[in-house]
Length: 473
Ligand code: NAD
Image (cartoon, rainbow, N blue to C red; front, top):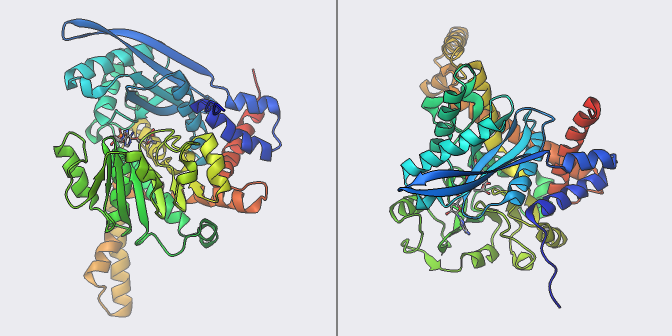
């Protein structure tokens, strides 16, 4: 018998959200409105590459505009299409609502393998793509603000900002047209690491909730937990590095494009990353590890936590029965398909969903956008003032007690917070509060069995409230 055709990425997201609509008593018209992608732009544009005209195809989907600007990354990938961009834009809508970031949802994609182009060629292509987006009303600080995603980083964001600035020199807020920029071009400290760090903050909060841990079949803390991670790119690298270095977790397998590395004693993430930098992004040949070409097989290894941090649809109906972990933390967008999600839920495997787990990126993008609109670095006004107050507190303690405060404690009390401290604090607070709301929603309603439905219930309640109050015009 022929197996059922799997749902497309956007259908998969919609089916997952439908479970939340079933729990909530929401007007079906409003539900359809929330799910609908409000606009999609497709552009085809020529660029002269090595004397030949190449035509590139790109998309920008605006899923929702109940809050403006709409926000979401731009990916450069050899496989991307309109459905994928729409699905990712929808995820952005729910993600922003879950972590209380006041943005609508959007996403962009350019069909390209960036590894086949030089830096100068990528700059030409990016600037041309940006012009298309700006001219067609799909990019500005007020309406639609991209960020990095797969295949793009702060370099591309700087080119996008510079192109927008040339087209709109009168816009005093031009730096806010894109986030994830280099710090010396209006970026914010801590943005590059933000998604990976947010994943870790999510996991730390999970391990502060004994009832949630118990229902996942886990106990203790992150220390010595055995972790398998897929993708050691921006998100995966920062998440794995923090988990290994700060939480003392064991990263026992790393899955990359060219295969998987396994080491039962755990990897030094920095060493693997260095090796990848020196070997064209490949992990094959890394010493002191067992290498296998079939990377996907390593997703099925026995472990405590599985972190897919590479791409969508890696856990499907085909391998969901074989997954042997207690907890999946979705650092990537859409790594588990709807069909796989149903199977994993039935098998009692806990999933921290993408729309929550990887929301650290958009959270810090929000901080960056505010910094751009306010034209001042966080902490600039109060840091030294806080230091002076700290010194007064030390003097008061010492004169009242007649004892000296130890140097290390004095340094801690006196030190004023800089931008990175504030960003990390805001990110940690955001991830903790959102987790607490999701966990509370899940544990207080018998109709909700999983974290994904709980997260979507939370998102959809917030969005529908906003839709209903404003109405339709
Ligand atoms: P990236 O391009 O920096 O890293 C992706 C990594 O995955 C690379 O190391 C790549 O070699 C690896 N990879 C690609 N195909 C693979 C495969 N088939 N098997 C194993 N590894 C493979 O991208 P990123 O920014 O780290 O994004 C990763 C995921 O996280 C995506 O789903 C993205 O949408 C999501 N995400 C990213 C951000 C962000 O701030 N960058 C924010 C939210 C969500």
